[in-house]
Structure formats: C-alpha cells, structure tokens
Image 1 (cartoon, rainbow, N blue to C red):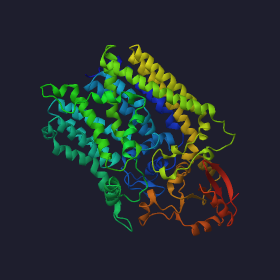
Image 2 (cartoon, rainbow, N blue to C red):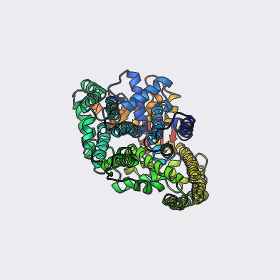
Image 3 (cartoon, rainbow, N blue to C red):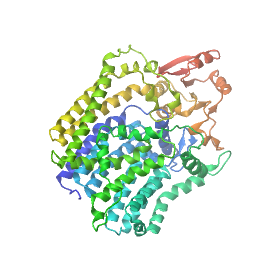
Image 4 (cartoon, one colour):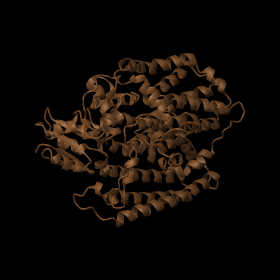
Length: 600
C-alpha cells in the first residue's frame, strides 16, 4: 500500500521531524565532543579540509588508514558549510537518523500499511538504542540506512519478478555506499540478507534477473576509486605494509577473527549482546516477541505470495538475523547491532498497527495488554530504583568532582559504554534531576500505557510511551552533560586557548585517545608521551610521520626548557615527579585529570 502525497503523508512526516528535533536536536550541540573515538573522528573530518586531501585520512597529523571514508566526508562537508564545531561534525550522522525514520515510513507504507511505516519510524526515533549509538561519531546507524534503501529497491523488484536495470544499479550503488561507510561488512550484510531471503523463499533464480554483471560494474565504479587511490597514495614504506594490508587484512579479516593488532577493543559476551536488544528497543521491546511471532520462515506456494505481507515480514526478519548471526562468531561491541534496528522497528511497527485495528477481545489486543502489564512492572521497578536513589543520595558539596564518587574499571573502557560502569550510589547524587525525571516518566508512562490498553485504546497507549521516552531521553542527555568531565577534555582546551602562543607545546600523557578533544578544540597538534600505540601506531610507521612521540627523557628536557608546555594527565603522581625538574602549575582539574604547565 503506497502512501499518497496528500495531507496525511505530510502530517506524518512533520510529526516525525518534530520528534527527531525534540529527541536528537539538543544532542547536536551538547555535550561537547568526547575523547577517544568521538573527537578523534571529528579531527579526521576536519583534517580533510585543512589538508585538502579527501583520500588519506589523518588524526593529529598521522595517517589514519583503518576506516572507510564516507562518514568523514560527511563530517568535513558539515564543517565546510558551518565551521569546525561539534554540531557541524555531528550533523551528517544525525541527519542519517532522520533519513532512516523517513525510510521506515515509506518502506512500511509501500509494502505493509501506512500505519505500520509510521509506527516503525516512531519506534526507531523513540528508543534507547538509536539515541545511544549516535552519541559518538560512529557510522553504524548510517549502514542501516544504506541496507534499508537497498532492500526497498530489492523488494520492489522481487514483487514485479523482473527488476528494472535502474533498480538493480541502485542496489549496487547503495551497497557501494555501505562499503564506503563501514568496509567489507557493508557488502556482506545486504548481499547475505537478500541471499538468505531468496533461499527461504525458494527463489534463488531471482538473482540472475538482477543484472548482476552490469550491477557489479556500477558497484566497482562507486566503491573502487577511493580504495585504488588510497592504495596508490599509501604504499608500503618504512616499517609499514601499506594501506591494502592494514585496511583489508588487519582491520577486516583479522579483526573478525579477533587477531587484529593492536587489540585496542573488547568484546561483549554473546548472551549479553543478544539480551541488550531488549534495552536498545526499550520500551517497545515488550512487543518484540509477538512481532517476531508474525514471521513465517517458509512462504506458502501460491501465485500472489510475492505481494503478501508474509514475504515482507520474512525479509524484515532476515535483515537483523544475518547481522546478529554474523557477529555471533566475532568480536562484538554494543553498537554493532545498530544496522539491524530498522528491520526490527518495521516488525514492531507492523504489529502495533495490527493491534490498533483489532477488536478488544482479539488475540492482538490481549497480547498488547499482557505486554503492557509486563512493561508496567518494569516501569514501576525503574521508577522505584531511580526515585529511591534521588531521595536518599546527599547533595554534592559545591565544587566537588564527580570523579571522586566513581569506581574505576579500566578493563571495560574499550567498550563504547564502558565508563558508565564506574557509576556508584554516591555518584548518583550528581544526577538527582535526571533521576527524578526518569522516575516520573517511567511511572506515568507505563501506567498510562497499561490504563489505555486496558480500555482498548492502544494508540493513546503508544503516545503515552512516546511521551515517556521524550522525557527519559532528555534526562539522559542532561546526565551526559553532567558526566562529560569524565568523558571529554574541552575544559582543558578552553584553559589552553586562553594562554596559548606560537612555539608552545601541548603534551598528552599516554595515547592520543586520552585527550583527543583537546586537539579538536584547540586545533593544535598534540605531542604524545609514551603513547605510540593503538589508533596512531600504524600511521607512525610511515617515514613522513611527524616526530610527535616522546619518551620520558625527551619530555623531561622539554618540561625543563624555556618554552611553556601544557601537560594533560590523569596520573597525579606525575605532578610530584615533574616538580623535581621544574615548577609545576595547575591550570585546571576535572574528571580526575589535570592540566599542568611549567610556567606560571
């Protein structure tokens, strides 16, 4: 069923746009960029503009060869248009979230129902996972966009039995964009999803109708040029094996086999990886079991099966199934599941649309009421815990640092959300406002959802959950701003910019990721003390690598020299060590880290 271009479509799109602005708009501007991946990737995007080099990525002046370029091109375009700032770096990623929502609306409207597409988009925008996975500049949600667009064209062609040349070329181009976004998995995922669907549909012959030869040429036309130019401009040199070995062998194959070097990442246990799906789709995951129960893994044999919802639901099931199965045999980060979320959102959206049209005594309505009861129990538990923490924790002393109330778990910091495991009961005092807001949101939201579904008003119940998630996500956004001194270093960059003059040096203690936001916000190249590891290691092997890596002896001479040095460190003991060589002045302290200088 295709949505018309009438008022209902535009009204729905306006609602989705408003919801996107409400949930994702504040996160464009605050908090500032975090250290590690967030600011490092933004720095690579800005370096494209500074070097006028759209082929070889750089971080802190060092070649950065491990990632595909399209996300960085998007950041560079945003900063070219609006200046180098956090919001302009984030803009392309946030727009991809809106594009996914619009895609879900039209996908559902074209192949299921208008209501299914609308609620799928609502589910995607008003869920925990997509929001959390876009707090850092990682492109996995964008991969889901390319996969969804490719599957839209594929399903349209499969239903007509003879896909057009243009649609086949469109699929090839979208797969190429996926490769330019995330590497080889950008090719594996959409192709494996289509293959698995056709296998289950007993129609593998359809592959030969997809103009494979000319489509392969289109794929190469889009995907190959950057790879060829990157290989030409980054051949084996010095101690490096060049671009091709590092990008394809080390970063793609060896990473999948958990043999990649350097091993600067961790893995989520497989049971937790699957179980976290319930969190990423909270609160809509309470409807996920019945949404999955709609899927038939074998299609019936009759003439109109291609146009039936069974085929569409099977394809939507294959979408997340392939991605989850792929990572079941590899290392996993929490956000690796992100490309599968749009497919699951469509399954949930379709079930919600069917429930809204079902009689009160129907199995759909009864299942909705059961899910509402389960969700109410969970909501009351969350409200009780967060409310208890808000009431019982003491107000922090003025000027106190949240770092002093945290536990330290460095072993899990290689997970994207690892720092949040540092939170303790005492630390919750810094989040009293968000805790109160969360308690109220989950108490009222799940209660109203239960109440309206008991009265046979599932649409009103759904809107109660949407309102709950808006409040909760705004509370989460506020909490991220409070937590920022642990995650980022903009405060140190501000202190440096107030004093910085030509010829002075900024030194990061340990690897570049420890203070990458200082690099982004000052625009100055950082010297790295005992940190020739991880992200900058391979680029430093090229003969033209700048001499930015210091050992203790070189740093001691620099610190005792005549020029001002700014030193960002989290090791308080080094302050005493440096004091034996030259005066030490504390310029700023935040998040358990210090900005020191050798000059007053």
